[in-house]
Length: 310
Image 1 (cartoon, rainbow, N blue to C red):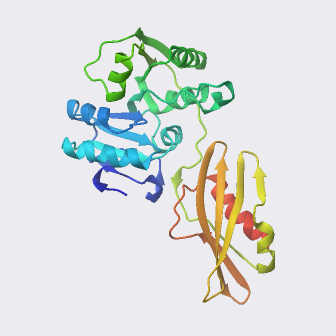
Image 2: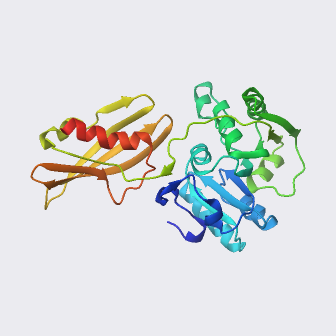
Image 3: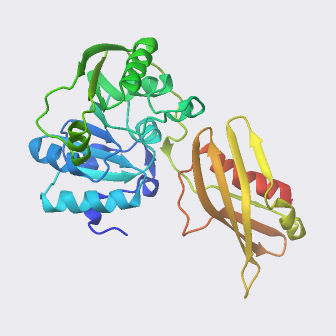
């Protein structure tokens, strides 16, 4: 449910990547990005305080999206856009090199256990991405109630070789505290702040870029092979996909194929449509109601399924 659509953008609907933020905001103001905007408390405060910048927030929770939209609307914010998307993927794929002035992350999930370490966003790969999309001298600001997490972020930032430490502070004084931050301080928890500045630029490999075309495949298909696809796992390099469901239309020879794919750690769910074009040819493509990012795994799933059926 989206209550104030003027605040949400859906990048997968765009035809070219990275996005043209000057066109989206209709200005050339500096870009500040928040990873994990939660209920939007900080976003509403930050945008009202800094009307001269363009704020972009990432989150994975629909509930958070609704709450944040409401807070932005109640504060009459005009300079914010919200995106339902993994923040690391969003930074890497949606922003041109050197286009962001500041990235903010307030109290991310720390993923305490050792086997969860790869889920922590502050791994070295994250700082490599930051080094590309941040402007020279651009900053990354992290706040957490977990000292080990901030220390690990500092070590990874330095290890990358692209950043220098600007600030590392315990219980910093701030103009604005979120509801949860106030609660933690009341319970006696310490708050830790890290700010690093970009001093050099790394290199990254983006999954999508340039003009985006709808992936499709054509060929002679043996429909009797369809059941064999179900729950089959296909892997190639960092790309994986599995067919989780196959559904047939009641009135014609048209099939809907449910697919889950991953490009390394970026997972997407979507549907493919398979239909007969003429007596000798079938077509498989993304279903019109399904709109994933056209990553290599998505494109490969289209081609591979037709290959199997052929």
